[in-house]
Image (tube, rainbow, N blue to C red):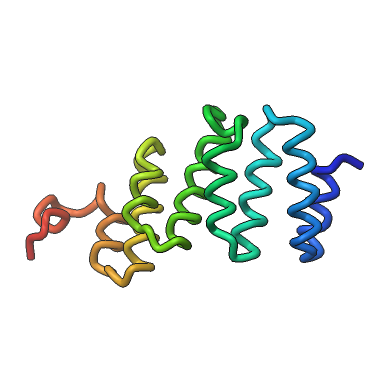
Length: 138
């Protein structure tokens, strides 16, 4: 089996430390493949290591310009890592290149997690609400 397949099997069984090692081996073996780098970041987040997840997302050669569909996944994971690090503004900024509907979902999640329920609902429904509601009106 490949290191990536090993890592996926280990992650499925909840063996996060060994899954992380397998994903690191897979990323080293094929530095142009975004899948192992993204899996490594997911694993790091799952283990509570948001700094490592962010470092992987920011430094992996495969994630510098991953293209579709990887760019959306990388943006979501980067936002999750930034939220875990207590940086909601960074999380919102990190998804600025996503399509509008996806960006609104991330913005809503950030606002809801921060306790801004009105802002979260507005972000989810931005294109369906009257302008006065989204701009702070009654």
